[in-house]
Length: 152
Image (tube, rainbow, N blue to C red; front, side, top):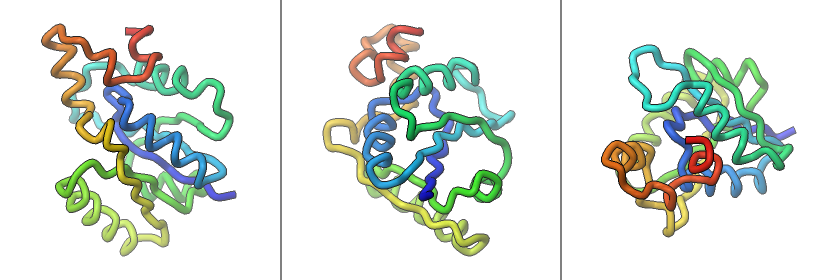
């Protein structure tokens, strides 16, 4: 089975994340969406809310699993037998940042990182932009999947 881990904080999941996951399930037998737990970070949405948003978005997709994890992503990949890390790239800055992580992961393990370019219609969306729109009472609904709009 080709299993890919798609790690992130997903605070909240955006239409950009949705696009990468939907395209990832065409490439892999299973995509494990892994919400990283970082005690140092301050989140807008609780871990339970973030998990529920993703589970609601992919409730009818058996190839998508949603989990939480702590520690190094490559250690968690080994734990769940994932040979690939799936990442989305929006712009050159994302590429430079993700490239350094991918090289480090390859040095420490045999796990390959697979990059997908975000769709042009979602390439401007980030969770931090969505949070800022929400904080300022803007219309965030066009930036996130239905499960976030309904359950917020």
